[in-house]
Each structure stands twice: as structure tokens, then as C-alpha cells.
Length: 492
Ligand code: NAP
Ligand code: MG
Image (cartoon, rainbow, N blue to C red; front, side, top):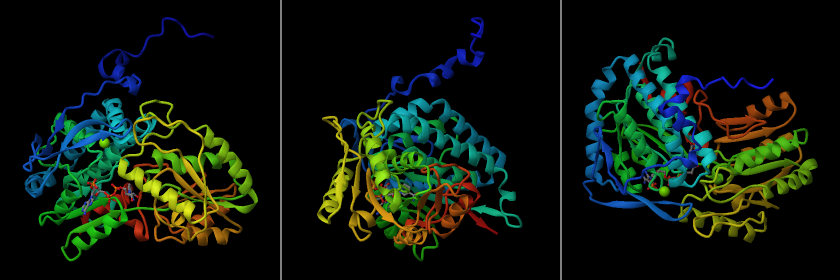
């Protein structure tokens, strides 16, 4: 039966934002200012340093805008604003704090298309990922933590949670808005105030989030956003009025921050790098597993801390998996991040492109075989074909170090014991994947892998209710879920 021609759109679809929301993201026009100040005490202000730096579109190398470079005086202003706002924010009725977080979530949802476009322009990730993952997940984090704000008394039975104070939050460039949401939402729900520093190549969506803070009337000083490079982050971490440091980024910078905080009494959580194993057993559904391999390492050009960058395939199915992988790789579309059919967009920066290329050379020099599909890359912009290496030994550099790009190291194993030993043979412990038909094997192997997250017959799935974090050099502390609240509360 064909639908009746009288059927009309529900009324809410006929007005305002609902239409905007329904538009394809690549057709949404996003206004980008020539330059951006910082967001301090509820207003956008010029940097005391008077310095600005370019932020570019890695998809075509064009300058998108200029962003402020905060110096120590700017850090001082931002921390002072957060400190002044803390007593009132902490005393605000928890249900009122929740209302602000709900409003932020709603407004972000309404403006999702615009944020998706801006995220892709500034960072190079495919628009379908910004649209389907980054922005919706950021929205969910605000909704999820809005729900916690007035239930904290029940979160840890027998204990009361007290906010910590001013939280310095430093985030990387791979999931710019999502990492901002992971940090800001729980901090505010727990009654803390924030100074956030986004990564220097991808500050634009965090600054636009500040527009939403103004729109929803968030009290001045509750969240402050300062932009700049590594020195800005270091000055923020070192500030005496900061009570808590939450850092997501590389293991090297994480170690330096841990040293800086040692003995200061500051609370610290670190979300650092990874070199996660993705293990394919011969009883797995291989077509599904090959999709999981691709999703595990090529999602967001491999700029993913939990990327399944070490692939372990059981010997009996190695040839079949490699053959299927090769076919699948030919179908991946690399290029313009704004094209909704693109699977791999641009590498985030020229520096990161150079780092990845160095690893490709080292891989070959140490004896592994490089494979890449034949793809035509755009003339301008930072692009790299997806790459996989065979003939990799566990001792090879490309099997040990985090490359943070679209590069997969393929290795084999014979028995489950060998798979576990090889998977755990790393200084990192962020994530792992298991592909098998046997439920008992999943539970057994998952419990013996030293990894913060273990995915079974899937990879790179996230949920605000599920805690995320690492072991060993992947850091400590958890983000998301009930456990994530502990990073922003003192239990008394
Ligand atoms: P990064 O170089 O460590 O930078 C992270 C942030 O720290 C940036 O905002 C950076 O500013 C700032 N920073 C640099 N030096 C600093 C210092 N001395 N003191 C304080 N802050 C400083 O890392 P990245 O290259 O941006 O990000 C990639 C890394 O993040 C990878 O290792 C990845 O695995 C990790 N990561 C981990 C998780 C997780 O949840 N475990 C999630 C995402 C990413 P600039 O932008 O100016 O350098
Ligand atoms: Mg940029």
C-alpha cells in the first residue's frame, strides 16, 4: 500500500532548526571569523600576549582563521576567573547545575551540523565521522553527565562527593570537541570549574562551544577556554590555584606533566597513547573481522589512541584474511574530508604527516613489507594512502611504537596463549579487540588482556556510560560512566 498523500510532516519539522538539522552537513554554511580571542570569564577577550597563530584546513592547506596564543598572564586571568566562580558554582543546587548541562546538550544537538562541518574543516576528519560520531557523542556526554549532577549522593553509597576546585584540562587534536565534552561535562556535573586548553591545530570547535555557554547563560568563569601551544599548557598545569589536572595526549607530554604535578597536591588523571592489539581467531566470522580491522585502524586516519594498530591473525586463516583485507582496502575512498563518501580524510598536520612517513621508512628498513592500495590523492592537503605491513616481527619499531596514523602492522599467532602473551607484550594498555565465534573464549581472553577497554566482535565503539582509560603507559584514571566521576570528586 502506498502512503497517503495527505500525510504531513509533524509540525515541529516545519519550523526553524529542525530543517537546518535535516540539511546535509556539507551544504551547511559555517561562518568562521578572521580571528578568535579566548573565552575568559564569560566573554571573548584578546590575548594579553597580543599574539595569534594560524589554524589551517589540513584538507587543502588554506588558513581558516587565527587563534590567540595565551601567555602566562592569560593563564593567570583564566585561572582567576575559574577560581572566583568556584564557590558559587559548587553551592548551586545540583538540579540547577544539571539544567545548564541539559541546555548545553540540547543546543549542541540543534547546532550539530554546523559543528560537524567546522570539526572536519579544522581537523581533516571525514564529514561522515564528525556527523555520526564526534558531535553526537559529545552531545551524549553532556546529556549523560547532566543526569548525574543531582544524583551524586547516590553514586558512591556511604560516601559524599565534594568537588575539587579549578580543573586544568588539556586535550589533543584527534577528537577536538568530543575530548572537550569528555572533560568539561563531568567536571561541571561534579561542581568544579574549568580552564580548558584545546590542541593548537584544532581549537575552533571548543571556541564555538563557548558560544553555546553564552547562549545558555552559563555563569561567567565556570568554563574558560584558552588557546595556544605546548607552553600555554605547561603554564596552566603549573599554576598554583589549579587543584586538578586532566590531560589527554601523548605519553611523553603526560610524563612531563606527572613530574610537574608530583608533590604539588594536585589531583591528576592521564589518558595517553596506545598500541592496541586486535586479535582474529580462526573461528571468527572473517568478513565481519576484516570490517573490524579496517574500522579499528583506519577510523579517523588512525589518529585514535585506542586504534587497533597491531593485528594478530591466527595462522590457519592468515592468507584468507590478507586476501580479504586487500580487496577491502581497494574500496576505501581517500580524499576530500568534506565529501560524504570519504572514508579516510586528511592527516591532521604537516608535522604528523612527516612523523607517519618516517615510520613507513623505518618499517621497510627493518624488513617489513609495505602494502598500499593504488589511490589518487588530492594535490593540496596532507594525505596518505592507508597502509598495512606484513612480515612484521614483534621487535620491529612499527610493532612497538604508537604511529598515530593509518598504518597497520600484521602479525600471526598459533595458540590463544601465544596471542595473549604477544598482545600484552607492550608498555601500553589502552584497548584490545577479540574476534571469535566462541563466547567462552571471549570471556577467558578478555579477562587476561591488560587493557582498559576490550571490544569483542566489534571495535572503536564508545558510550558515555562506559568508563574509558588505560593501564601502564596508557595512563591512569577513567573518563565516562560512574567511575569517571571519581576523577572530579573527593570522597569524604
Ligand atoms: P600532545 O602533543 O601530548 O598534546 C596534547 C595536548 O597537550 C595539546 O593541547 C598540546 O598542545 C598540549 N601540550 C604539549 N606540550 C605540553 C606541555 N609540556 N605541558 C602541557 N601541555 C602540553 O599529544 P597530541 O599529539 O596532541 O595527541 C596525540 C596523542 O594523544 C596520542 O599519543 C594519543 O594516543 C593520545 N590520546 C589519548 C587518548 C586517551 O584517551 N588515552 C585520547 C586521544 C588521544 P599543542 O597542541 O600545542 O601541542
Ligand atoms: Mg586546523
